[in-house]
View 1 (cartoon, rainbow, N blue to C red):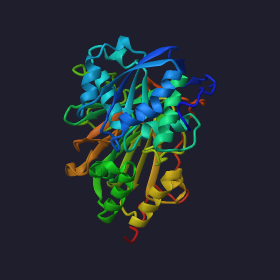
View 2: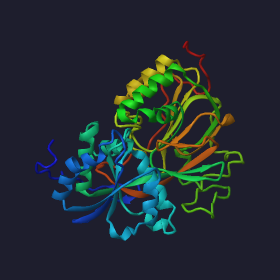
View 3: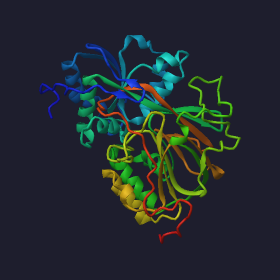
View 4: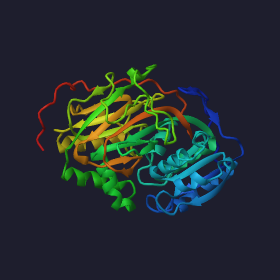
Length: 408
């Protein structure tokens, strides 16, 4: 599609999401574009001029363009920016820069007001999971590269805003981090971080990284516990909320200090040997990784996947290949478990295994997280309210039993 060929936004039906009515950006509107010129294949600025700018001009969206120069530069910019000048903040990069922006907003003294500033994701990185998820919610078919960029730009021109969940993470060191997409530990995190050296390959870096990691498959020891979504509904905890007065952000009412046992209404996974653990807020883990085909998360919940030790390399490869079309849950793998949750705790043994939060490396240490419902707004085109999710164990799965290891 030619971006300048007279595109007009398709009409969208406004509906009520879990947290209330959606809203619209004004017309005309002014946006600040934070663009990472080194993201993905390093062509973000060229793509902005050729694919984004013509559509913005047609839709009465004026912009100021700022280029990020280093890691955490976007975080620094939004921490000091006069946000009242803009109707929205647009991030043109991969998921890592959106992570920086949200954490920068949450680090401001006026964080409660700052996080209300609408955000928009324009894909120009390697993974582009958040943009792919928004593309999916809008009803578009799964696409990549320039087609995905054009679709997301059309969403910005359409101006529809939808509420999004925010994941608050508490680390054993006292660090608090906010996630807009995912926390991964084990295989997925290893592939994400170790494939950074292949960034110039674009999305192909993850395929290369997966093959390399499969060749030396690792097992990760740790303790995993979670609060099932259905037990969190209207649940008033009988224990004091974990209130971090020294840090900005909402109170994590479902969490207790990491040094204490999890509350009795949580579920503790009996196994302690894993290949991967993934907490995911959205449908996609990459533009061609449809990780959560079971649907958009209801307000205040997230997808939790884990794969127990014993899975063969062949089955793991089959799962990742099937994930492109969202068919990995149909593979009949007894080691794969899925449950919708409101909170979780993960305690790695001996500090082994990397954490990736929104694709960014985080020190491996005990971590716990809680979802805060409908906490910020993003440009979206979702036309259906999210439905409640239910656990989906596979027919052959017996969570109380661990099958014997498959041959490698």
